[in-house]
Length: 184
Image 1 (cartoon, rainbow, N blue to C red):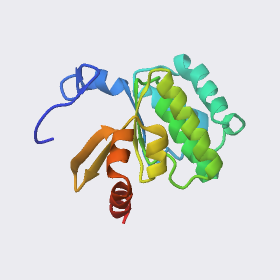
Image 2: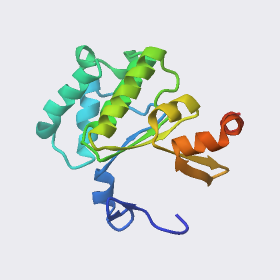
Image 3: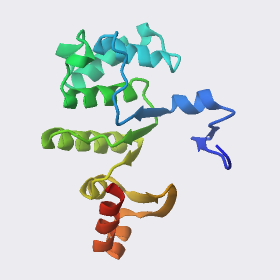
Image 4: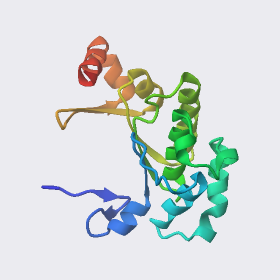
């Protein structure tokens, strides 16, 4: 960081980093699971990063595994999961500590249409329950379907940040071209 500051629900991300990070769930695009842990243990282990003890999160881990259709595979190695199931595990891990802010990097990249629609429903539900969701996507239809506001970053600079409908109404075809240009 070279300038400015970031506050997460009032907490400075540098001086109050523990409090700030406890409020954030992150689902990266790439899978980065510990290959020596079972699927269930991946969730329980992740909770430890937020100061939660295994005894306190076991029930939540089981609930998330059930919700994401992974309960029958709880004791398996993640390497045996399909790409879609790995994506579900990534989301479950991001939610294990009940964050207020969920950051998703390309959550539907490489998943089939059915899972994409399931994830859209889940994100709408989480947002409806009060969770803030920040979503990065190259799919214009995904941004249009899910986002109240759209920000466009080009060469590391924020070049647009507006309510979705306003941006789409004003930019129309040109916005589609910008997204296509950014994905090349």
